[in-house]
Length: 399
Image (tube, rainbow, N blue to C red; front, top):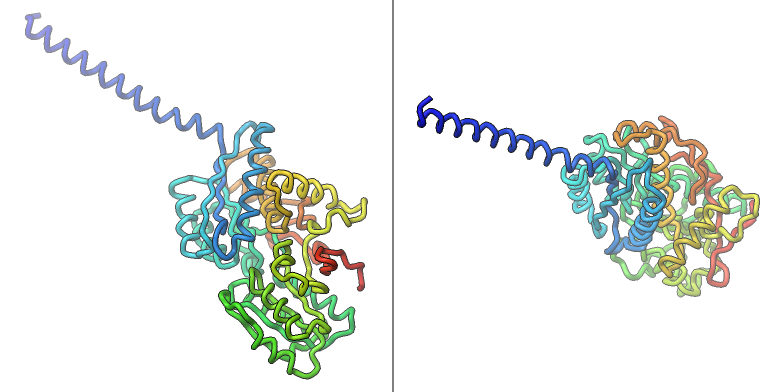
């Protein structure tokens, strides 16, 4: 072989070796992220941490982060650590939809626990349904799970259940004529529709109705009309956020306190009592056992769960517990238990196991889901509470 041919062969060999090394390098780069990915499981969350619904999203955010840290410290899920990816939508449905898309396309999450409000949840549902990623919502309206969507679940009691619990109590007190004053937001509108639908079942007549917007700062005009309507025996306020607290204050200012006022589970946090002040005295509402955990009888199956969560949350955050953080707790652990049963990070297998949840004792009640029920709670999960001396009290059955 001539020197020039030997040089050509040498160059060819070097090029071949270089190509082999490049291939190995590329292969190695492809394998390394996969190995890391196998050590973690990504769970997404879009919450209203700031903005008008921050009283929902902030405790949800704190709860998820607190318990993900605890789960990871205990070894994760079958040895895999949870990587929680949280975005703050500020209560904006358009932002929520954008973040939902980002969770799927960029972050590659296997499941989602979030959606602080009905509006943001409804905006995200099509995204997760199309991607076939399980979505456990923390919002209230029944339209989230009725009709049933394959990949969508939720933890809070529905607005329909709240109406039923309220009218059950109204009927027990012998009242038949009520007025509604409802928020025009997604939750308020949905609950108003459900209350109108179920009222006749309890022999209740809705005599008059008023509404208020999410940014309204005074409801005196609407309440004055209600006050002037003859025969009103109770007033029901479907709504959440600051609106119900303003309604409650205006209610007292107009001297209407002799007529019972009912609020929804959408105000089931100490912040409502703080915002409404002394005017909240005597207000009744349906809520989860979490708010009165220490008042539950020792034999109540939820007592240990709600008392432990309350202590853990309040010790960590130095803030009073709310049912909204509890919804996050329930959603996270329903998902974690489903992942353990599935022994997989495949979203479809996780979805199937979420739907098979049975007898899960959470802060909101005892959850048993099915292909036709993606909530898994019945009316017994609600407790009827009354504000007394600036705190929640548990009403005895039938009172």
